[in-house]
Image 1 (tube, rainbow, N blue to C red):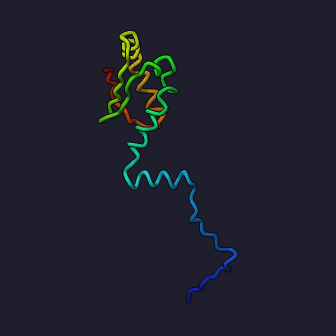
Image 2 (cartoon, rainbow, N blue to C red; image 1 turned 180 degrees about the horizontal axis):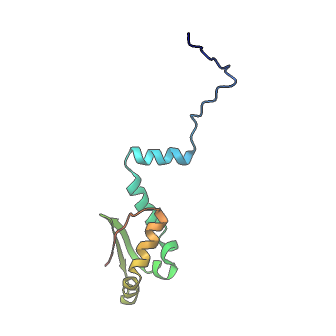
Image 3 (tube, one colour; image 1 turned 60 degrees about the vertical axis):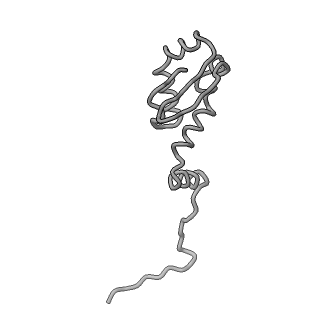
Length: 107
């Protein structure tokens, strides 16, 4: 005959609480909003990622189909962005923690 073990209610600990961070992470994954959230966070962090000199001269910035589109006002800044292309892609993807942007398009 098998023995049955009972625990008193004081010794049973069920952990069904999760942190707010975990809850938001699950929400983003369940509703397939992760990619859009990552793209939005990149755009909002643009001045921090690239610096004030270039971010102040950025007229338009958006992400579409894993491409980061940047419109700037001067040819000098465009040239600087072309030279920094790999560094920018690395910084952007490191900020998010995964590859969100694969290509940089300067308009």
